[in-house]
View 1 (tube, chains in turn cyan, brown):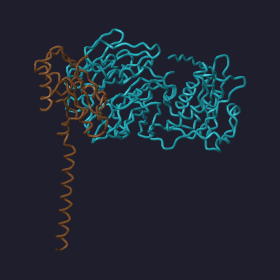
View 2 (cartoon, rainbow over the protein chains, first blue to last red):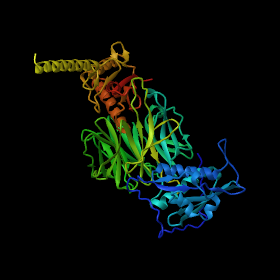
View 3 (cartoon, helix red, strand yellow):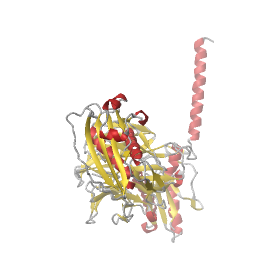
View 4 (cartoon, rainbow over the protein chains, first blue to last red):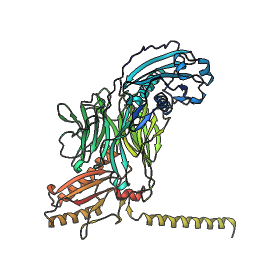
Length: 447
Length: 158
């Protein structure tokens, strides 16, 4: 899988925040999405069509604007306006928008741009306009290979999101997950990777062996996951650029529940031996293995705090599954969940202030968040079965998987990827070609 | 017969039918004791009279009396067939988080392994693998289906 990106910032970058009227508060549930007009990027004369995977993309400017609109709509923060209400042509709007026209259709923000494909390069630029204040807010240009046009759309989306919310975006990212096919009793599972919006799906394994729980490294090149290769369940490391994979460590038994440390240098995981699972780390460079927990109970699902100083994990040392926090050397173990039912799959937010989890109570499964001392628990969604949240890199959205009930023949069963905002609003299905589970969100590809 | 008496009669009938339906449900779930599976569906045999699997309560890895009976028979069969090695597969139902279930399956398989060892089978002949919730035998989403899936299965090693 090759994705070489050379995005060159060519143009001026200036922000006029003093007079900006348009702003989005994303800390509350946004029930009132911002009306935004995304004008198609004007395709300059002499621009060539893009040939990609047997398809010809004629109007890449239009396609880029569609990808941006889908990103905005799915974020729940924006309401992209219908293009047939646009009066001004895209090339003139990009130079000097007639703000009265855009006000008339109730747009508060306007995106314009132009694009040209020639000599094997795609050059695109965009401007974001504050319609209310009649001001330009941001202008940027990029140059890349034509096949990367979707990424250009995602980067533009991220820049606009950042300008309007004051926080980093999450559109130029990928999701790794487990693709599922076949009957429940003989499920075939493959590692799959796709763009955050579901495009560009690629399967990384063939389905010959069971694979589970893939997680991205903060560097994006590496993935750690559990594979039953040769019927020996072990944690593996996969380089998604080269396809090279290797077993992590030399453990005389099952290793599982892997995750990277925030610096990407270690893998933290469980090792099961003689009926007892403890948490271990392995330094990928020095190959040094360290035992972190030592307890006769099940200790699993470890996740580091973003500063690397703490680890949250799942243990049944109190009798049932609960969530704990300890220092990264294994000292100072503290139980943080005391609510009714079971708690599992803790995962530390990239902002450091929250832990997302799965709670099981009275036959229902909840995805929730709480502060890192266990206080302030908020359950975001309730369902028959759902688990394993993973954070968007900006800590605003959680992705997880949900399974449905089946009858005695296994009919009615499905496993799907879903996302929900931290606010508990904007729950959305993420469409995948096959059933999917165990999603993990990458960090931003371009930083 | 006054009104209260007839009402009482109606209530009695209602109560009796409730009792009857309650009995019917217990019969239906007669394949479970508590939530441990006690039926015979899905069970295969390692040899005549030697069942291949034992069942567990939700979130538990304690061997029931019935499970110990089955495992003692397995141990006797292995003592007679000294060239046979087995793999013990530990499984969980679909109602738990994936990673915890992997650990739970491992714990269940080891409970079976430990018991076989106390009956004279050397650890070298017993390997253990957990499938967590990944390989149910019953694809239903009912308490009975889940009880069949909470199991450890002894299979001849290839």
